Length: 85
Image 1 (cartoon, rainbow, N blue to C red):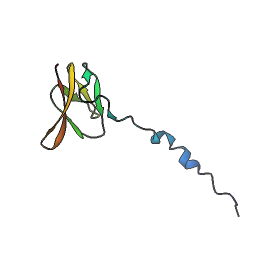
Image 2: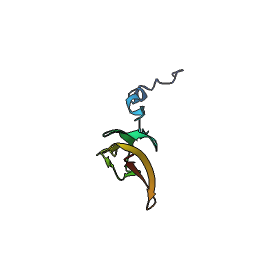
Image 3: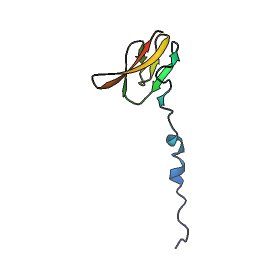
Image 4: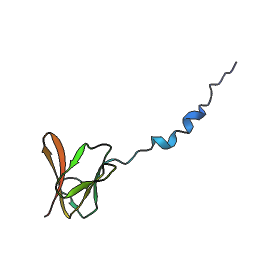
């Protein structure tokens, strides 16, 4: 009978899936952005695109024009806008 528990080699193969995905807010409200700057990386459309921004196929919200990032609420949802300064 063994006196030492098994090593658990299966768990060691799952290390790559445990890495953080670097999601979240990249530019805060009031911050200047240029065309193409990423504002938010997200899983699912928690934040909706508004004026001056677009949403990529992986739900990334990025700037379509130069300006200042602005967050607002519309119909109970958080909307991201880029307003020209």
